[in-house]
Amino acid sequence: MPTDFLKRLSEGPVLCDGGYYLEFERRCLGSYKSHIPMGVLDYPEGVLEIHKEFARAGAEVIQAMAWGVRTNEREQELHEAAVKIAREAAGPDRYVAGTLSPFVYSGRSKWSPMTDDDKKNAQEFFERRVTQQTAAGVDLFIVETFYSVDEVSLAIPFVKQANIPAVVTMTYRDAENTREGYRPGEAAKRLVEAGADVVGINCMRPWQTMRPLMFEVKEAVSVPLCAQPTGYELEPGEVFNRPLSVAGLWTEVEPRVLTRFSMAQFTAEANRMGIGLIGSCCGTLPYHVRAMAEALGKHTDLPDLDRKYQGLAL
Ligand SMILES: [Zn+2]
Image 1 (cartoon, helix red, strand yellow):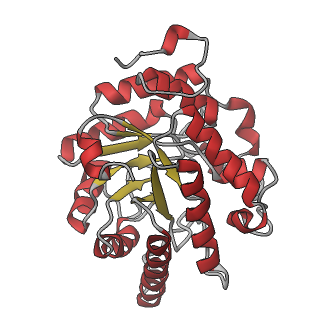
Image 2 (cartoon, helix red, strand yellow; image 1 turned 60 degrees about the vertical axis):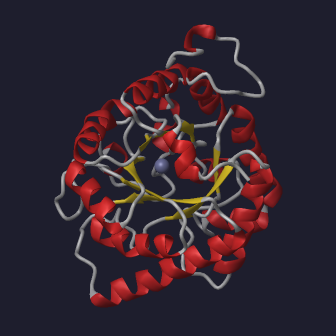
């Protein structure tokens, strides 16, 4: 078992793995139609392979593929399998992160505040998700891709009750505020008040447009920070600003995957900015993580020969 996660984070930058959800679908391990996370049960060997690729690349945190799990009669089985597979790939030296994703799919075009029934259902679901993943053995939780502070604030207490570090990141898809209208700094303060140990931003923006928002977060709070930008060259809101089906959500931007050098540059800049937990989200693959590891001077099993980003952050 590695050192306590928050202690480790206080000693220097920690590197997360890359994006799972879209890569599952792309590798035909899961389907938009039949629910992507089911791949954990249907094709565990394929899931294990992705985790191992990220681990070989240098990721120090392996995130259980439980993002997007819905209320499901197999949810316990799914959570247990996701954590078990991640642990197998993580081995004794890497951290395994459990995952919580929004209960209400906040990407819907018209936001409305949660009703009392919504809140009750969300709390029950978050509690089950935390209990099931905790029982399977996680070192931290990454609570991510939330658009609403009110919603994520319902989830955080269950992680804290389990006495597990909570990394909580908001997503700013097409606006620079949460669904409640909070700027990133104000949102971060509220997350910390709700119990988050690490706060930041993930997904939907490459570093270029996430960076100014992360500066607001940095100004507002004194807890460790996390940034996990997308691996696509995107303008804010771009993938959702046209009438796409769910399946078409990301496919149009597939040719616009960022280079490994771009991800290494982001890593170096995030490190200079003092962001402790550096990772990446949708669109990023093991070769990105390897470049990011090398930018931080970390170990990677299969070094890249392109030396221009090795030690970029040192
Ligand atoms: Zn993402």
